[in-house]
Length: 107
Ligand SMILES: Nc1ncnc2c1ncn2[C@@H]1O[C@H](COP(=O)(O)OP(=O)(O)OP(=O)(O)O)[C@@H](O)[C@H]1O
Ligand SMILES: [Mg+2]
Image (cartoon, rainbow, N blue to C red; front, side, top):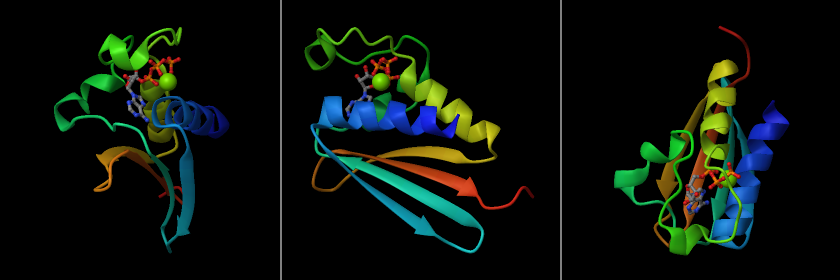
């Protein structure tokens, strides 16, 4: 399931954002995987809507992809199933930043 979540997010990052950087940070209680890309990001007003099934942003950004609009919602469901979280932010220099927060032990 975690492989599926990471694959969905990396495919998005490379498709919508051309390339991505992935950073793993360990804390005492949490592992944080950050996936940052260099595309247009997602406007704040759309950041909850994109998790809904079949929601894709304006066609100019998504044309000819054959995507279904399911990947982000599936990734967030997988994180929740592991007691974790998925957060979306835009980077100050542009691009989407996805943070995956995973508890290191089941509490
Ligand atoms: N890294 C990103 N940068 C900019 N927009 C994004 C990014 N990731 C997702 N989006 C936007 O959010 C929408 C939903 O993403 P999601 O991954 O759920 O579906 P999809 O990529 O369209 O199709 P698929 O189900 O094949 O993943 C995308 O269509 C795109 O408009
Ligand atoms: Mg996708």
